Length: 306
Image 1 (tube, rainbow, N blue to C red):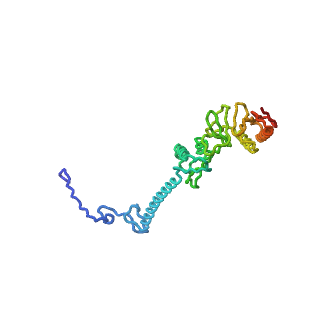
Image 2: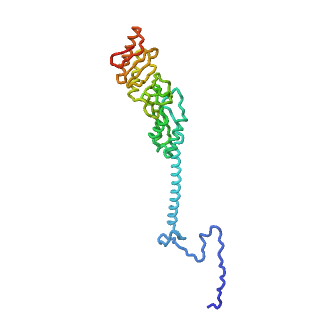
Image 3: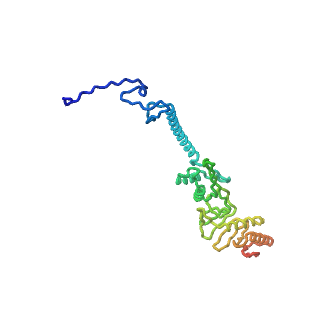
């Protein structure tokens, strides 16, 4: 029993000075060694023991090696994904033109349209995610002179490029003081990459064409005009110089190069028959020396003139 209220001063305990690398091997005071070196005896908390069998050490080595392999595989997979995304990324895809034309197309304008489309849909910058049909409609809306915009890409989605096909005009269409071009499908556009058509149409009906991808004329009308003009030019009685659409319904007036006669036709009649009637009428007029002001072939197998 202690008679003084304060405790005895604790003396500092000496600790052995250890050299570098000896901390894991030397004996320390108040420390219990755990584990076992026998392959026949299993100790508690063997994984944290200081004494480990060769089998346990090998097992830990395998686990450590597996962790390293997993980490290495993850890095390789990440690099592969980055390389793949870089390969399929549509940055500035090249543009090709399916058919040569007299006027060099403005590549920058079409490339900018593609970039504007991709800017509004960032995910489609990846080649495999690009919607070719939607992109084609977008290009044709902003450039009505484009007939097709085909997109090609490799099997893995990369190496993307576009091929543009332009509409080739069959005739020019003048209405409201503006000049348009019309292809064989009846679509109107204002930017022509080819030569000037031989046939010019003057629209006096007062109906303005839709140049935003719509048809200025029906396919039936354009087909009618193309067949009749081509057939008449083949008879050697002159060439159709211009076409006028008057306010009258179903009437088409032709002007023949080198002749002062105005030819009135009807879209409801067969174009080849009307071309034949016009050629026969001019043959008759030439034989008689007649120079009529107009020739009307709207009635089958008859020609009226004045």
